[in-house]
Length: 355
Image (cartoon, rainbow, N blue to C red; front, top):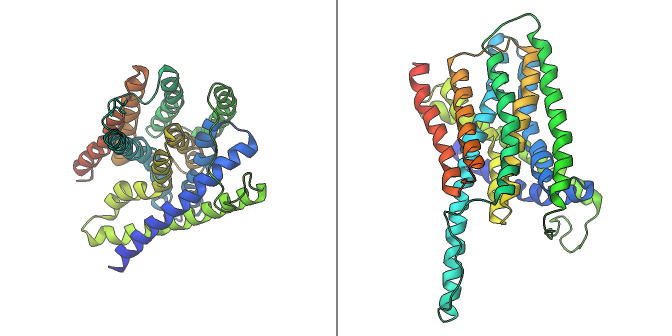
């Protein structure tokens, strides 16, 4: 039971530290003048995706055997899979719950006001207008071709393949610059939102820069250690539940390592900041598609077996589904939640592959 208790404790620690992190990173974005959307796609995504990149780096550089190094390759593939399916699915489910809650609140208010006519939030409404859909689709258009190349390289072998790792770092550098510029341009058309007081200085209307930096870094440290301790508990609990080490690594560990991004999305949705929640996930996916991939190409053979290839196929299928829905301007919370079902398909398809 101690492992289950520690698992819950780690999840609570991750959630609370994410509360502090998203609060600080919004102020950090304001200090750096990076644009509101870049707070999610660049700053928050970089902070929460950095631990997973470190895991890949450590695995591929210190692994004594090829099998040990392949753990890093699995992490590089499992991260995007969990984000494209579980993270988006949870986000959609949270949006459905929030709209129902808002609808109930409006009805209760109308009843208290004597039943006067009110405008009810509709659960089936799209997540934004055409401009918002274009913003949401932008990251998916970047991610899909890069990820496709990433999977294709896992199926072939040639002498200079490790050198191609540089291209993945270059791709993220181009994305980084373009995202900063476009986010600033988008901000000129959006209404200014008032930031919540910094938790470290709750009474300050404009907190000190040092306090913003300290709160950001401290929250990241807690997230890093709590997430990895969470994974260790899963490694113990998996066999206790009769799951093999391979199944635990492919099904449970990716969810655990992407838990900070999922928690960030939940917190921002609770605060009504849907765009930031979605931007954090898509930005983290871009990092996961490039940085760990470049590291893996440098230090491993980057060869995919059946389970890794299956994870790549499901990830691409989920993104194609989301991209087509966004381009049709029909992305609703319910359709976003459907992305989570792709992970179920992955789990079902994994059974015969491992068998």
